[in-house]
Length: 104
Image (cartoon, rainbow, N blue to C red):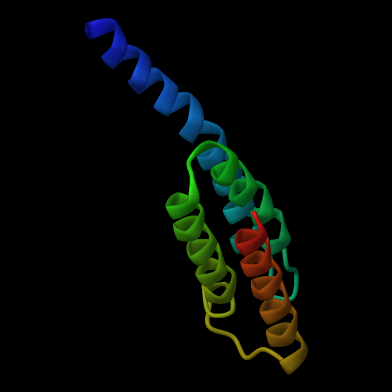
């Protein structure tokens, strides 16, 4: 019984660690560069890993989270005026991430 519990916890850690690591790397890239540079496409890696390892509900949560984080970079870390092309680029990335989550 104890071995089964330990195995389950280790298995969960082995599943979540690569997803969280990829998520963190993309967030650092996204938020340390100006809003004109869009690294949001790289969020498709954690979406696909979550789909293959965690299931449908986790994939949906991660997909919605990365879409929000991609748009949030328009105002964080600093509020600056941005041009319409930057907004359009971000919206295209969000649509691509939503399609990736939906198709996976």
